[in-house]
Image (tube, rainbow over all chains, first blue to last red; front, side, top):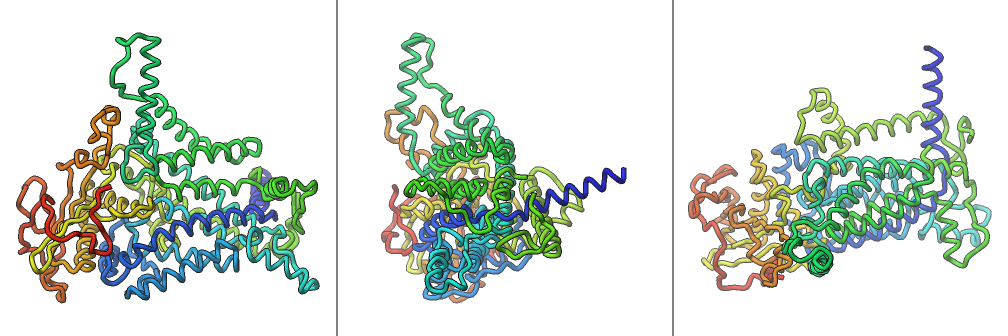
Length: 367
Length: 258
């Protein structure tokens, strides 16, 4: 019995350390940072026309009312904890605009990869401040982004695809003696990517559990209901479906006779399949994405699924973010090979100093 | 297998055993906090939790809520509940000189993300009102006060209106009314939520009143919430007429009906 527990503790400890602290290539983390930054920049720019009207002293969301809302213990918006937001300290329209542009600067610095972790932390602060000032405006995107931002704050997110990397490469010429490559493998990359991987798995599980509570995801009607939401949807598919429906009805009448085909069908099989595909994908994603053999397939399918959900629901930034988070499962060295093939078709791929292929493979395999 | 026993810097191998131990504890606590937050958030409406679970969540919530990690991620996108339909805010403002303006919040927002913020608010207001929780009017209260502040009006009627989803026969209909899901035909009048608010003296916050306009009593307003609402006058329960000035002169809204 004692030997068993000894072995259990030893192997768990070794496995934990290997899972979290084996150095890995930061190349993918850099690409994810760039993509996340672009999505966040777009989302933040859409806030510009309304920012003063929301947050200024005489705006639509008066600060004292929001605070009293929190103090009333409204659980939907949080609890009694005093939540920091720099928007609480600006009230005049000019100050609100200034705060907005300061936030935009931080997000742009994060996007281009300038002062990596510092700009990541500041971008995180921008997001938190917005969310704490106007919790009723929060959508899926704002709720999901923090789980990625934590990974960027921990890992060296500006080690590739960044201004920092470009400046670092330039320093080879200016001060070769002091040169230390920025994109070397590190255990902090692993911790950052692992955090994003686990967060994504948890979010997916929570999301599919929520969907399975409701009939429309079982009966197949969810896709239709998403499609006919006039204010939320990104694209109106109903016209295309009208033609598709007419076409399928004509085919059915041709083969089965006009009498046996109803004039107004209540269901469309294609939409049922679409709904079930979303559920199947979300059910299988947390299980299959950790398998190195299935992973490329799962990531490719996720691109299609999230694109379709984005078009249906109109939640484009959220769906983009979910896809970007899935890239955390792709090893940096695989991306290097892809980039090398795309950019000039080099025969040899330059691996980072201190690169640990074993570590990257373990990161990829989830062991 | 990499050798994890040696202490190296960030560039090469793993951290020192001491750093690793501290980090491991922090990582474990972080993931534990997120898991508890997800479970409580996701099942909070369906289940009652043990005192231990609630206590643990309360201890961890300052961390998760400060870093915005406390979202339940239970967005099912669609749930077939009444509040799952899209909603919109129709507003009627009454100014000190007696003239009135009608508008729709966020109607002029072309970018979907911008429009969705208003829809998100309207959906949330409807969900709170549908659930009939104790302070269901709280968010409507914020918006009424905000509308009075931002427009200079002395009275406001906030009408949260629900769209009926299009059906397949609607979509196949040759009548253009049924093909436009924003057509007033799709608004469900019986499921509107309406609030009235006024602040006759703009310099005196104590003069601010808000009340919920009862659906069943078509033209009678029942005073409610926010302390001093006892002598609130009745307001019209529906926005029926379009009055003098165009609402597009206001900064935030316009009344274009796309």
